[in-house]
Image (cartoon, rainbow, N blue to C red; front, side, top):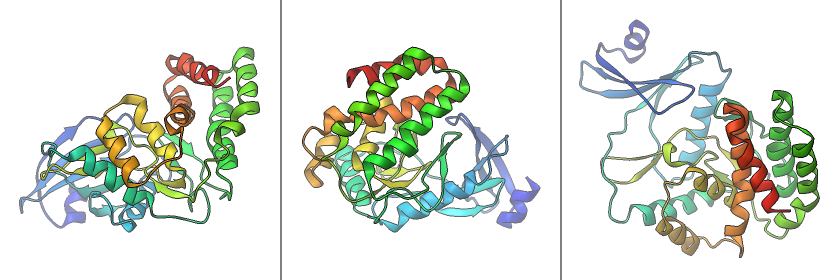
Length: 280
């Protein structure tokens, strides 16, 4: 606590540990002035992971679209953010969330990727080199990278390799024709990475940002649920997607399922193979 007190120039009067993260230690602290902060640290060294998170929050803030926690302080070991008091969802929460996400996606770049590699969970997310073509970027820096990582972990047998090779032969036909400008995406948008603030509005946390295809963002949202039909309809009304987008979401969910395979083991292997087979 001494280092926290020196950083904040205030005495810490209480702290409570929070759940929800699989790789980080999180707590809420209160200081003598009554201010509350969210504090995150990692028990195992993860080079640049806190810096990457800060840079992701800053990038989202550039879009002036959706609330993120205010950054108070960070270094290699600790991140201090504004503590977001939770509330109940407004009546129009899902509609607002969908619209605000489209506004974030309207922040564009001329290349796919980001100015640094970052993390997706505790695995590296490869954003460099930058690509002019989404189809190539997504294959090389997302799917093929995860496949090679699965090989390294011993999860790839001959059947998996055969299916993945077959999938490569049809992949481009599925993706090509849906190209658009690179959009800023959160990158890890599931139900655990947004909050409801005291006013009942959405707040984004724990980004894994890069400039990518908007459909890739929505592909992650379907992995664990937490987003209702009004969210998708309001999004599509405000910023229409290409026809057939729902049929392509699994190809983008695949990246995250493979990442979970590499993070948590073979419990995600059947889901990985099932998605691949569905496109063959």
